[in-house]
Image (cartoon, rainbow, N blue to C red; front, side, top):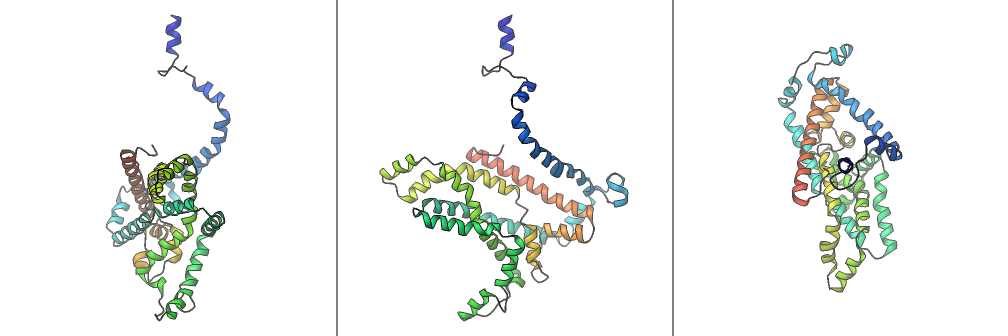
Length: 316
């Protein structure tokens, strides 16, 4: 009987089963460190979800959340049937896909920095590329406006110097996506390489030396040693990137937007701001924002599923 009781208290792997109370008592320091983060996310990320219900109501402030009448999917139907729906969805998707195409740039840059042998130049290049990350979006947009000014802008002066004609880039709808995406790459490229450089630092130097002895070229070492070593990191960051696929940087779009380039600069995020904050259509704007969030969740789950099937690396 004693052997049966002892066996019942053991897990299938042979380890003794520990009660939940004892587990917390033995690891209370870890949970104490974790608690502030859990409280923060609960207060600022989960409690606000209570307000999602107004997407299905005709919200009236003096009636409150529960007193406002239910309207079902009326706001969603209004958005799907609106004149702006196709343009908003198209502009948001095109900007997101444009940025997704450039996802490999930080990887390439990190691999390039990792291969540099001259230490001083490597540190200088890292500092030079990291610095733009600490510039605020407002300042970056101010720099863009100053550089692209049709009269005093440096870019137009260079164009005129080589015989071209001055151009107002910020009012041309065809230029908006390029300006938005590439200025974002300039600001985030260096900072985005940090994680990849950290992953490359974990590559076993003996593998590199063995490859050199076997006559492998630098490109072969990158393709067959460095890239496979950081592939799990690449997959995880790609999945996280897909989780914010529809969120493209509302502040910067709003600051660069004007009436002349709205054909390509109108996105879902700015539409939510305009209808919700400026026009006070809280229920309608909540429905539009919820639609965007649902797409992000679907894309995230799909990317995680595909990554798990293809590379055996995933978030869950």
